[in-house]
Length: 111
Length: 115
Image (cartoon, rainbow over all chains, first blue to last red; front, side):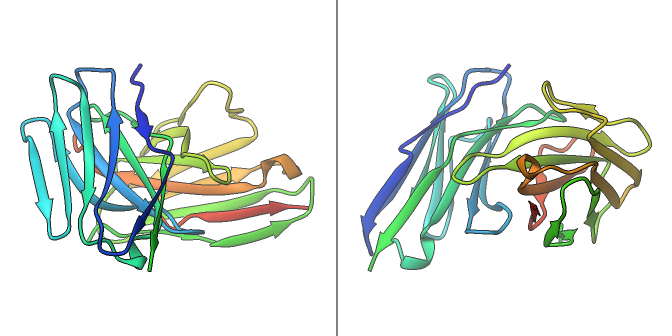
């Protein structure tokens, strides 16, 4: 089955700096890669996703890049703000199948 | 669009009782719903996948007789934790998906505490 690894497990950045979280996957058949933000006591919220036919996608301060050959994808958050502090999960999936989640990254943005 | 609700958001029960958690897709028809369990500071662990009108598929190690899942309609799935014990205390999250689509839409979660 699919195996998704996520690094780092914790990340602290100064407000205004950029944050990068990286994930690798093992199954070349995976073609959908969402990123979720989870605040304490709440369910995961989709913040951005990318499909395997695209190399990069951007939405305001958030961007995701995908390298299919190397089987890794990354989340980039620019101009971080304190409200970006949360746990971020990456996932990989095959159409119609379950999500395989990374282990999560706890991001702290220091004002 | 694509809103998923869960009820209750928080429940405390005594050991030995059963608890039912509802998951609803509010503005779309979900052919598949997933139930996850999450312990503090850990990732989401898939418990089972349910398709409307058929039996749920449970992940290895998840007791189907303890965690009863019903997906009776395209907008509602329920998870019943039977004879709950303190070790069942956790954060339970559902998600809903449309057939042939990759996307899953997550509910806000239910915090279960078994005393």
